[in-house]
Length: 374
Image (tube, rainbow, N blue to C red):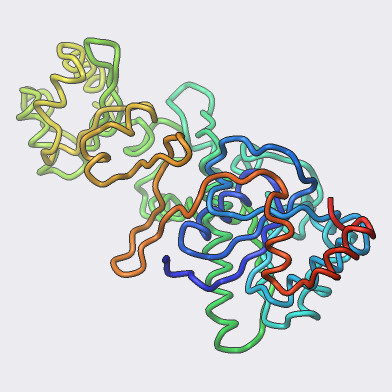
């Protein structure tokens, strides 16, 4: 059941990229235990909580920290998303945890990283991607940058890099017997996501000027266009053979549109192409172009996406506890990922998890009496 079956993970509950990382690990079969602040709170229908059991420990008490460290002794991975120094002040920083389990992978998810002038400042996705050029590059010519939801910092540059780093460290730990700390910063991750654009600039193929390049809405052949019914379609006809097919399918005059890669012509060609796309509905353009090598797709909202025939055929979306949500990805041919169960109430699994991880009934009674449970 998933390629990470048998991997034990402790997630110190937080928000955003941390829970997302835990979801990915749980989808791939890891046993993920989410350590919550308090029990009895009914969980919201949150995709990021799926597949995880929840325990409630009072990490502000010595007894709660000791219980956490006892869990660490049997864990492969622990990760947290607090500001630098918080876990150390609680008594469960890397030194304490690695002393209990020298092979532990200790993941740390922050925006600015564990060190640097901004390390202890507050921030959000929009701030982190501002510092790496990512936000500056997104938007149209003559307009301000457009926040790409919180996909680039929190999830692309954050949670995904945390998962990659922790799994790489786990692989190494199983060879060396030694754990380590994974410092996953959204600034670092979002900087890496911009690698291609550093390369393009060095090749003379990219201007640090928003909306003037072939991938940032500058080019007429790589953009979104409104259709007759007020919906949108996307075109990505970069390669010459795909561009030639666009001209054919849309019945565009080669004398007008033939000089594809002359940036001086792009604004005028974009206006002309926009007028063409407004002559048909989204459905009509889909009938004409979808599935061809034009590099075309309708622009769907995430509710429409769940019912698109391609996504339906691949079961890209599933239903868990009555909630439609993305299915686990990527796909494995032999050890398929799956959602084991939906969102659990906060602390619902405390007694069972602690028992499964080696706490006796006496231990549990003592922990409860001392205020170690939240």
